[in-house]
Length: 79
Image (cartoon, rainbow, N blue to C red; front, side, top):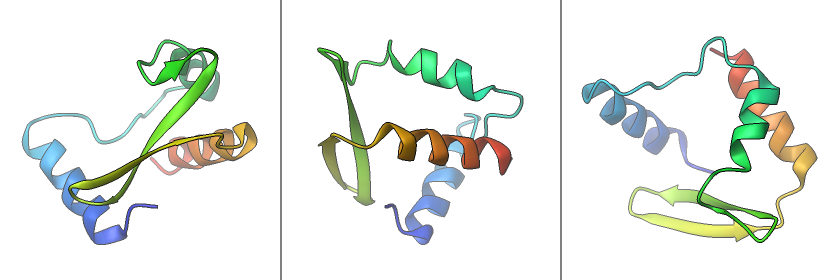
């Protein structure tokens, strides 16, 4: 959802503050379990903040769990 130039800019910003920009060695199951404790998880429903562009985000519900697992799996394997 986030355009590549904005994604790259956000990664540079995080790195400039010494914050992690990858999740090497993290198992998919661990990420999925941790999501249940995220502040966006409310009343049994996961909410997602999608960045359309810097300064413009949308909160979305109802994202297909299979899609979420696939995206997380790809991000963890692209480290």
